[in-house]
Image (cartoon, rainbow, N blue to C red; front, side, top):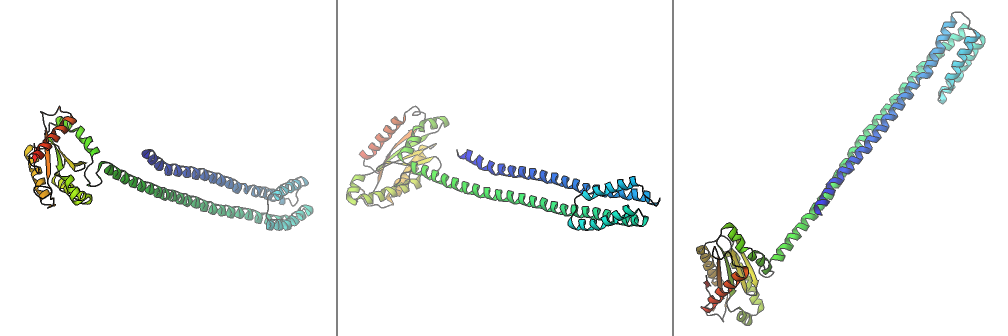
Length: 355
């Protein structure tokens, strides 16, 4: 579930960015189409210029004769009217109104001097049309470039915003996942740990103890299970109280944990005043050294116990060796064997271990 959510979070900014790029591409295409249309309009502005050139040519060709025929005047008049029908601004209409007077006068009088005036007017109009078209196109190109820049920076801003937003969302998600992971680890620790002593609990002991023989046999190891019991602990609780008993359990657990601090050495609280040790791949001499050190450290705690023969709190232990002779033994058989050896230690004066 978490992996699927991770993929979705990673996919989301990619999808958003692709969508934004797609929209930007479509918008760019529209702008390009608009530019082409404006270019057509720009070149379309040369249509009236073409008309003016036709009129100019016809007048020049006929003016040398000092007289333009009625047929030519009709053609020139028609071309002029078509030119006038083109879109004109208010200022252009005012100019054309004056030129129309010259034009009508020239056609009416059919005199060369008036046609020369018209030619000057036509040259002016041609220059005006070309200049106007060029200025309008420059203005559009400027706006077009501004629009392109606006689109680019908007696109980049959106992408950066999306990346930052998704980064924050992803960061918060990862932080939440980290907290959940820590809580999960804490839960696992609490689920497998005894609340009072901090050692592994009986549930975790059962998990490892059930596989003790199979792991040892698979690796051809000699392993050990030690069952530990605090001597006369019921009497200790009766004499000093349960609070003192809890403190004593914590101190014994602390010493036990310090005594077995290597890899493949596990310490447990099995319940009440009972503790356990499982050591993988250990020799008998090594186990004896650990147990002797553990006993000495317990005595060095100097926990008073008036009901004990030593007047100090002590422990008794039963040790089971797991080797080739016991690989086929069941967990229950091993546990019973350790319990019997623990009982033997108690019967023989306590404060000792039996292997």
